[in-house]
Every structure is written in C-alpha cells, then in structure tokens.
Length: 294
Image (cartoon, rainbow, N blue to C red; front, side, top):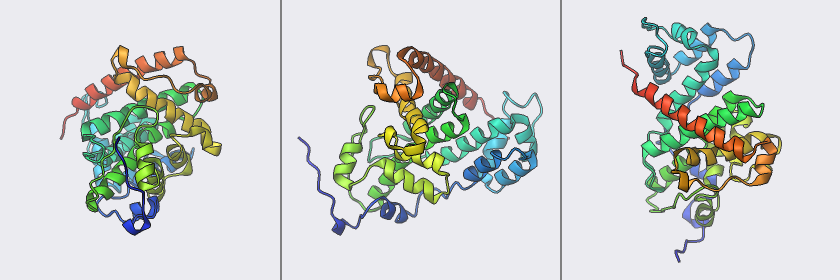
C-alpha cells in the first residue's frame, strides 16, 4: 500500500494561504470577470459600460471579438469594436464569453502532479460549467454564477501543481473518480485539499463569496452555509461532467440522496440533464472549432 509523508511545518508549507501567496507564475489575476459579473447585477448596466470593462483586458477583449465574429453571430458582418461585439451577443451571453476567455488562459496547463493534460482539464471544466448552469436554471437558481462556479472549480489543482513544480516536491496524486477524487491523498500529504486552495486563489482574485464558497465546499456541499444550494449544484455537475463523457456501462454512481433532495432532483432528471449536457458540449465544441481569426 502506498504511504504518504505527514505534513510538516518545516517543509515550509503552513496551509493553502501560504501555498498560493508563494506562487508567482500563475496567470495574472482575472480581475475583469468579477467586475463584469458585478456590473451585470446592476439593472442599469449598459453595453458601453460592460464593453469598457472588457477592454481593460486585451486577451479577453480579443476572445469576445473572435466569438462575436464567428459564423454563429456575425450575420455576414465582421466587427472590430467591443461595443458591437457585446451588442451582437447580448449582455446575458457576454458574461459567459468573458468566463470562457478567462478560463481558457487559466486552464492552459498540463498538470503533471495529477497526470491531467490541459485538453482534459479544459474539457472537464467546460462540461462542468455547462452542467452547473443547466442544473441551476432547472432548480430556480441563477445560471450565470453557476456557470462560473463550474468553470473554476478545478483551479485548486492548478495551484497545487504549480507549487509542487516550483518547489520540486515530486508529489503525485491520483485524480480518481467522483465524488472524492484526490482529496484524501491531498489532505494526508498537504493538510488541506484542492478545494481549500481554490478558495484562497479565487478570493485573491476578488471573486464574490457566492462563487468562492460553493467551490470551497464542493466535496461537502451541505456544509456551505447559505451557499448550500449552489454547492449542491456544483457537486451534481461534477457527477454530470463524468457521466456525460462516460460509456453507458461506466457512468459513476449517482450523487448522494440528501444532495439530490436539496435540489429536488431525481434519477430521471439526471439522465435527461446528462444527455442535454453532452449535446450542449458537442455543439459548443463544434462552434469553437468554427471560429476564424481576423
């Protein structure tokens, strides 16, 4: 049986805060996304004000322009202005586009600590985002926040991998199956889990607690306090991201009944959502593959 070292303060790692504060080569703070999300909560938000926020980040602005100029949106006319791009896709969709753009930069990493390739990291995160939004809307919660929670729920893995690489610790965690995955090994070796690391990272990036806390409690959603409903949505969406890509005979066991009961979901609901999520993922990938660069 594999054994793991006991975490020691002498190793220089006191907790997730210390881990994250010592990282200097992660992507820059995705500050545009929290600002756009906050602005969209204001009923008086205008296309010009949202476009101005997006324009502060050249990478995000370019990604929004690229998608607005795709065959799906452009109606034969290309645009080079963010205001036109936002108007074309609409304020509801623009938050999703900004989330995708920010996440694409954050998820462009192989994670050797977990033996996860960047294409798999993106696929899992994107599928979870689609599933989270779909589940949230079905149970009467706000889909935009759920989408963001789903997309960023794995950023703790990125932080741990970056720390492991930087400090040459040579740690290797098995990223197992739903629901516990690698958290038992992480806690045994590090003293905390990737969910705790994710919460620290997201707080540093100024994300609202409504985004941070469901991710922090994704492995124990009933402990998320006022954020229990969205934490349960994320937990079920994590099942969905595996089930949507699994062979019929390899679909993981359903989430625990108390978590499904919290959302008022049954097995039939999950099967319908699984099929819809898989279809949405395939359609979205087809759209992304059709994008052209100016």
